[in-house]
Length: 338
View (cartoon, rainbow, N blue to C red):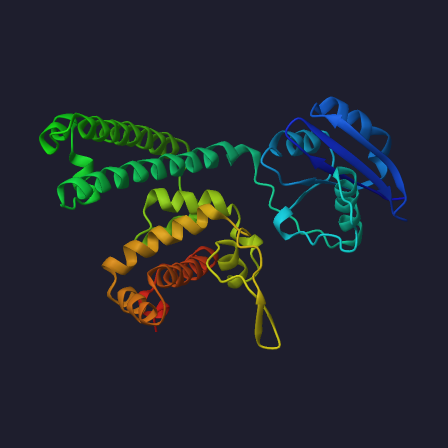
């Protein structure tokens, strides 16, 4: 007799629901987030368990790793792709846990990728780099705005990065403006050191694997973006079609169409936001330095706006990189924009 378990995971506790192949509920229990207690509850059912489903919340690492290390077949549920049960007025953790088990039993569970534990930390380190990059950008824009608002001049981001604490005194007469500018400058320089340190650490730990080496032939994708893509993708073989990969990179539109009419939008958060960022960054470079990419961008701009045109170009680059990684061939600009 096969059994199925679903675990609705929260920050400090979880709810386990176990059912058999006839959908009969065998156990439902709330537990603290202590691995030994969870394993103890699962132990009597272990020999018959066809799978343990864990929802992909922000804190799934410890539970999935622990269950796998103790021989359980773990399935990571993608919450943004799960079809919620309809016609039920009241739902709670109990319903959620059994629903996870139920979907696994029916073989309709949308599963997330369980990233290999040994490379997860360095991937997350690169994700933290992006966190600091965005904060540096926010401080750069803040200082640019202060300068433009009070002095009527516009400074580029590269000019902003070159400013030091004394420059703030030369720019402004008002002590409050000097104080604000110096705070921005100090923060920008501090974040730049952190970002450089993270890049050095990542480069010392990982190298581009063979199937990802050709990524750097794409204009705008250097070593850091290449490593970001490699560490986020993991195994390109898990994407059966180029459209699956582009969708995972959030490079395609999200909408529902019926009888030729738009009936709303699907979840825009489906996919990987870090890959979406990587290809948008590559697109920004491409539209400045690749003539054919620039023409493609201008063509899209004439029909929509800058954001849509950039996303369209990012989609092009994401689709090209799929074949580059899958077939291990260099980037071909003529083929991409033929």
